[in-house]
Image (cartoon, rainbow, N blue to C red):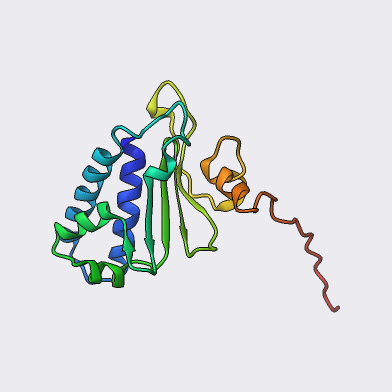
Length: 170
C-alpha cells in the first residue's frame, strides 16, 4: 500500500507544484501529510487479494461543484491553504483511484483514464514495476477496476485501429 499511497500523494503535490505558488518546503509537508492521512484512511479498506473491493472508498474526487475530498483538504490545511485556494490550484474535475497494484487518474468527467503506477501481484514487493502508460491496454486488462468502470459507462470497446497511409507528391 505504501507505494500506491506515495504515488497518489506525489502526483497531487506535482499538480500543486506546477502553479509555482508554493515553496518546496510547503509541497514536501503537504505530500508527507497527505501520504500519512491516506495510509490511515485506507488501512481497513485495502484488499490486495481483491483489488476492486473498496475501490469506491479509495477514490479521491474533486469536482466543479466545489466538492473536495476531505483527506486532501486536511493535508492542505497543514500548510495553511484554504479550501478556496486549493480549488483554484487543482483541476476543477479530478478523479484518482488508489487501488492495490494500480494508481490511476482522470482529469475531466469524460477524460481518458491514465495510469500512474501499475504492478502485478507477487510474493515480493521488490518485483513491482512503475508504469507511465495511458488508457490503452492497461485499462482493458482483466480484473482492472478502471476496466470495470469503463464497461459500466458503456466504454467497453477498445479504440478503433486505423492504418496510416502516407501519400507523397513526387
